[in-house]
Image (cartoon, rainbow over all chains, first blue to last red; front, side):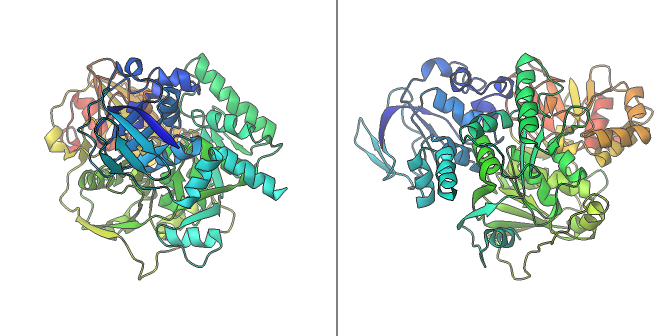
Length: 167
Length: 416
């Protein structure tokens, strides 16, 4: 799958309370959650972000709580992919389980211009191309087991396949 | 220890760090925030039953007693699901406690178990020698359906605490000190083994506090190997047989940290991150609007006892609101019988029924713009307890109690 979108840049240790504050957890609706995405650290962000956009972040993105509302809010905002130097483990799991593409890339992307620069992402190869300059970055590809989950469309579909094979 | 538990449960001879394993889970936990999402996903499977109604635990503890209509609707989703699928361990308000205090107390946690919970602080149960880790709602949905979960076997970091515990220093201070040393991603994807002479002497409540905050260092789990303190705790709570699992004497660790803690002070995590840790003397004089004693981290009986011992015969500073939240009904009753609640009420503290409430800025003690709180909870991220421009400091219960009296952060010795 090839994704392309303009980017928004965040720093290190972006926690799940920053991604979606607990006061909004009374809903499970991704669109409603998306209206408050990153609100406490960047109040204008829900208005700026648009479908297909890509989030770029530093290390330990999504640390803190296990709330799946965090990747759901990101998905609900139409964000196509998150690229970070590293992810907190529950956020990583949750993203794969709900089918939000995420990539770990150790290259430094922090200097990119938010809202202007565009990236093209090849998920299978882990290849990231800076559209304006053609510069290439490389992300770690997923292990085969996770590719299987993603290929099926998330953990629910994976479990359905497991249940079917038991019948 | 984690490698051995995962290997044996996966039916393999050995599991090495980095291996992906699919293992049966012994317990799967959800709360009123995460379980509604899981239940929505579970319904997509179209199943008439869950994998095992005795191995699922549902605890409405976050926004309960229902804080508003939306929270009431979410709690209703749990209640109806529990009734429809015959979930044995569903804890209604009145029997409910904060999940990570409640499950060990109720005897649901045994050494060697594999436990997943759709709550990041599920890692608490490692204090009893279980492999326990936080997952998301979809993982919980899958586990409720097939009773299995996938894991990447983690590398293990060993933390040895040497010396002797100074007065007023507790398990909370050891874990804050550790997080301050290694950072909020210092144990990312790792298992954290807590060991050494100080841990061997540490009470079960103190161990539960330490394992609870493994996630604040990014840990997959935190644990203490079972010993006599563990077995004493389990006596009278756990009827089922269990097999304790231990690290091999020649176990390989990715890294070993050794701390001499004989001269550390009580620790304070400054906003906005649990790794922004300093000794209490560095925080002295920071004026407070609210103090919270409670949560899955420090709402246990030992925490209430030490807080009451500091507060006995004193009054909360008029500029401060003190909230005391016993973590479970059993702890509440015990605190009542020991006269601790009278001490808190005489001191003019508000004592609440068990709830996660203020810890995550849900309800029961939200901060206004610019307010500062000291809490015995686990996170101090931006906006964690209310307004994005409010601030949360983290400490142990003795420091919290003393600071509520003083109106500003102090060492407990200053009010005794």
